[in-house]
Image (tube, rainbow, N blue to C red; front, side, top):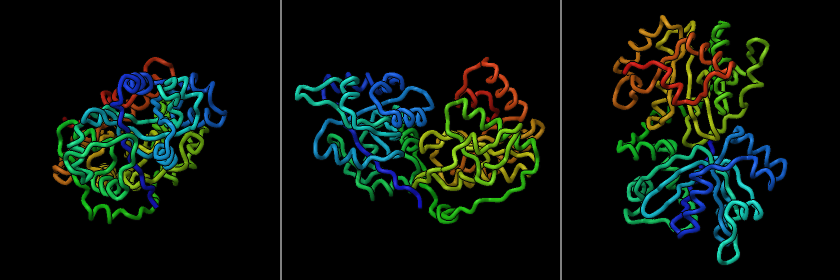
Length: 373
């Protein structure tokens, strides 16, 4: 069963202290090293796992009956929308939480009532939204003049309806921010793929194994969690088992299509998808694009890039297929969304990273990829 994800409003327009805290621990991320001196060993290891050693954003709530109740109900993968002066200024996903007054005093000191923001939660996949609350209210079926107060959860039936109709919250807000109208997910597509059977696809080529191994390697070096289908996790290349390099649990949620579990390689961070790759070696190019098409049909507002990885001499055929009306229509836009990466480019990127010659992130990868536009 797919996990329900909760969404919490957090209001940060509470004066000088709140503004200062926002810039201290959200705009300016904090390091694992400074938090480690106040955390238990198990908590430190969780923090390292969630953030892959990178800096993080963090916020907290002062003690109070409703604050404690809401904090207790928070789980990894839930969303937070931070509100200030009529706008959702930031949205993020919960990674972990700790109750730690000493760490809170280190981050934020104490308020005029002698309290500190000790009910702490660490956030991941944060985006600066800057979307009007009035616009967000349309998708939550709130009155246009509704404004959140304090730290409060959105009613779960409203959350489920929004995530079911439009997909993940982060992608939805990014689309609204761009002034684009989000697509409603086609209901019959959701029903078609409600039950996902693990596909058994012939992948007999060692070249396919090599490309999958290199994509796993690049994902790990980019500080992402990497997923490959369960049927591929026992594969290996150069003596390295995929199972030792990837996550073995996918974390299914109401707003992330289960179908993505069948894609050759997926990069994740927390519960959110960051990128997906289909490797086409012995199969027809059309079949790989069709798999990405099915995924896109279930998540039309998603903002993560999709890639076809194949021999360079297959590039023209990839682009030809992407321009077919069935893929380039106004709902899927696959000709604009799917990028092409050749085998030689993947090998080059992986080898350069081994030598420490370049930095790496998804935006940089997109620039290295080729597209029809």
